[in-house]
Image 1 (cartoon, helix red, strand yellow):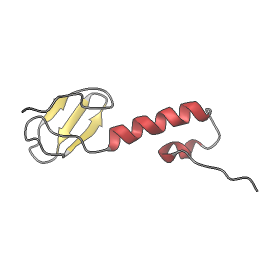
Image 2 (spheres, helix red, strand yellow):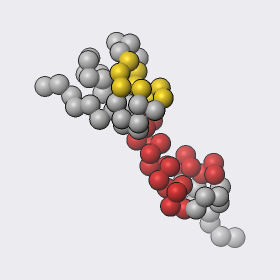
Image 3 (cartoon, helix red, strand yellow):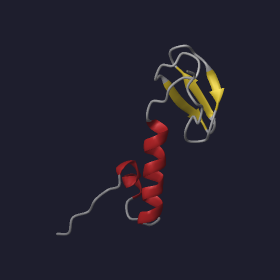
Image 4 (cartoon, helix red, strand yellow):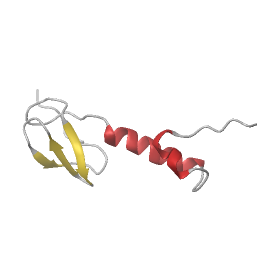
Length: 76
């Protein structure tokens, strides 16, 4: 019995699409789903709504950023 390792969230694709593509999808989703820092209130409550649209659940700020990351620098 050979060991089969699923690649994080991309394990739902099984053996389809190839290892490289599944690894790329897994890395993108890992970055996308983590908590990001809000540019307005500097709190880590920003979540992804759709491609390029982000929402802070604390101060209810909705803003545009990158497709998979916010890319907005924190204020100092």
